[in-house]
Image (cartoon, rainbow, N blue to C red; front, side, top):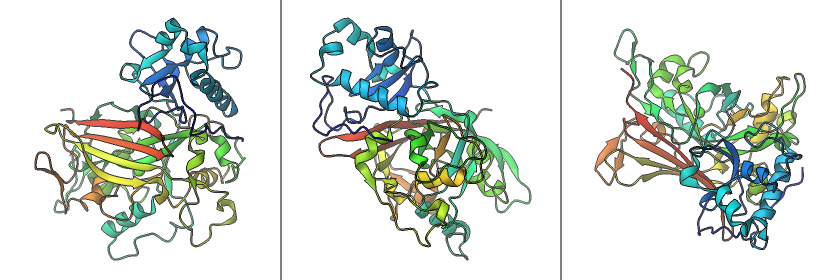
Length: 420
Ligand code: CA
């Protein structure tokens, strides 16, 4: 698939402030629902969402080529690339077509704070991988201190599990503290109640553009042609439920209560300049999982935490997508290697992406080392072992180019107390 990379020198007539996540080099897709208007597919530019349904109604985007712009259903694979190129033309600084049409411009450009972005594509399937090797090692050290940090299969198989698609929510959706079963170490029997160790997990995910038939597998070299683009994923986790339920079949209710995604799908075209080889894989993967090209991306990741008493959030984690052991292509190749079919709109999350050092860990579990080293919130002097009611978690991600940044916007959630 040929990638459309917008030159670093390109500019839009829409004002884009320095450090914005959404310069003309990005042009990510989302689904907006401004008050009093229909849901529409949109592209983020500067501080605005460009409503593509409005452009279609005005004849600026061909209705024949892109018939349905109130959802992504018809926009698979190549057609999304063509649409992105069309949007690029309309937003280029020397193109007067939309720039000089005041009435249409005012209708089509919705300020981001009024755009009410939704889950970009409500997924039919959600899979959570475990490809952050430093996270997997840290968890191993904590939970199996007498054994090697990584289980013997880790460097051979991209570990994952089928998660719950129905609880994938948009950024900003409040997160209810879940209730569940946990067994305090000193107790003889488990108890049922609100989680006492609620956590976040810093992950990235990819949406699928093009599915596959049952019996067909997607190879590492073809995998990216099936991808629509990337979002930030917060895989909220109840550690106390997880510790009690995870053996022998893996996490279940400890993860399924909510998963937050960021609003804008950043395309692989926009991320093309930020490709990297990624870390060395040793042992060499089996032939069907051998990496193809440069399958990883240099994307900076941040987690910010704000209690209800704080006026501003505090940076608690700085990491990078380069810490993934298995690439997204290898994940998809592995997932389909048994012939299972995959579908448009499936969401695949990476697993928690922690760096090697303290300060780069992508979960409270690791940041506080299971609560043993509570986090200090400097503004108020509060401490945190895990998340408390009223706490807000904001994740951000961006690739830094020369004079511009390809960003993902915010992936935000605030904890609400459990229902009585
Ligand atoms: Ca996870």
